[in-house]
Amino acid sequence: MDDDQPSSDISSEADYDYDYEAEEDSVSTKIVMADPEYVVYKCYKQDDAARLLKEECSKLAQRCKIEEDEAIFFAQKFNFDEKKINDELQKHGTNFFIQCKIRAEILPPVLPLPRKKFKVSLPFSRSQRVSSRKTSPGLCRICYTEYEGMRCLSCGHEFCSPCWTAYFVNVLQKGISSKIECMESKCEIQCLSGFVTEFLRDYPKELKLYLDRIFRDSVLAHPNYRYCPGTDCQGIIYCESKKSHRVTCDFCKTSFCVLCGFDYHAPSSCEIMSQWRKKCGDDSETANYIRAHTKDCPKCSACIEKNGGCNHMQCSRCDYHFCWMCFKDWKSHGSEYYECSRYKENPAVALEAKYMKARHDLERYLHYFERFDNHSKSLKLEEELRAKIIAKIEQKVEEHEGTWIDWQYLHDAASLLTKCRYTLQYTYPFAYYLASGQRKELFEYQQAQLEKEIEELSWKVERAESTDRADLEKQMHVAECKRRTLLQDFLS
Image (tube, rainbow, N blue to C red; front, side, top):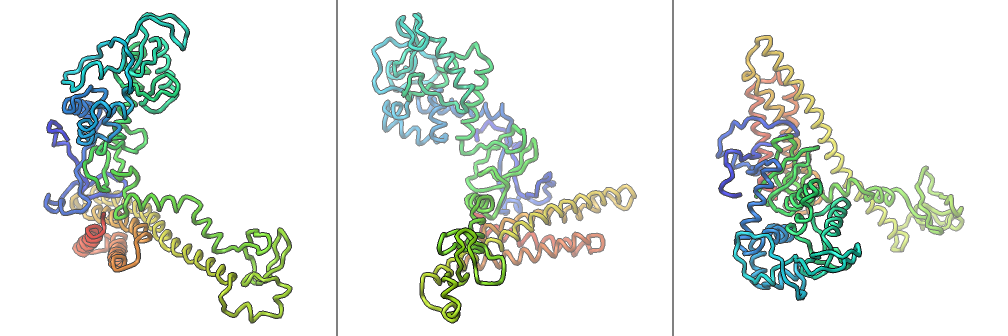
């Protein structure tokens, strides 16, 4: 971040919870920093983020000695990697602009029109750097009208100003990106922002749309900025961490992973959760079920599901009679049962092994999914429990049975239970994709320890009024230590 950004607004996710407002931080900075989930981030409004991005592009233009609209283009193309941009400029010079298609390889012999001045020194001559010019009067090849002062990019394709304006308005109304190419068919030269905005001065709606798209593309390209995924939220998170961390928007209180934008998912990585969501959402497990519970007719290959105990099958498509176990013709099978039950290496048995493997894979997936889903449901029930505890505390305060501070530990216990179970839920996708070995054995041991302590805590929270406060707080400490230990060892 720039030095001029206020440090007092910096936020951190030392103690995250499940979709509720963050609790007051009651631990010391030293303990917070020891949390493997600790991260520093900042939440901006769009106007503030736009100002910071503009300043960053202006500095890039000054340091690389290029125009500001060129800096915006390069920043979006190379994800604001200033070192890479500067290295490419030093290595390739003018050819770098040609490679990026913001200048044509051969400039037409026309007099340049001075562009908007920027307070930067330029390493190349103005004739090389010019990207838009007025040419002598001519016939526009779009509207076939004689026009004084045709306009073109460095590619030399001339069109009149009204046609350029109509083109930009049409592209903005139909497209979704800030990237606009030359109007000439098959020409890939890019129209930079300085050129486009010049034609949209009399079209405030389209000009705002274009500038909003430049801003959006800059946010998406920047490695440290991310839009808040909250409904109708305009918040933008700035976080320099390259690891998966949970952040909470200051404006809508939505919590999400700062890297992928989905629900926070420690200890699972973004890549693991991407695979897990796909596996849970697509037809992969449906296909596994079909392979595990159905077989193909050996004659017509129709998919058949066994709906009874008898192994004598009849295909509904071709009326072929066969044995469910060995796939042989049932007519020749009647007197040869011993051949069906006898183990031998043959294609039919190998095919049966494939079905067994599919059944095993399905059972393994269901083992992890059922536990993942069960903890998800438990989180919703415990959120209701937390609401009841809050209501109970308020009732006791109203009845003068103590202050909120006296009963705060009950709410803290329910909040910690939610936080621990949330972590436990996402250990199952991690375990599903974790390769067998000593590391997986250690993880499953720590996972089991965490689950044991969470269930103990859940039991005591549900009976909080009859549970000794010291005993409850001790259980809270043990559960949180188990959670942090697991994350410390396995959070990538």
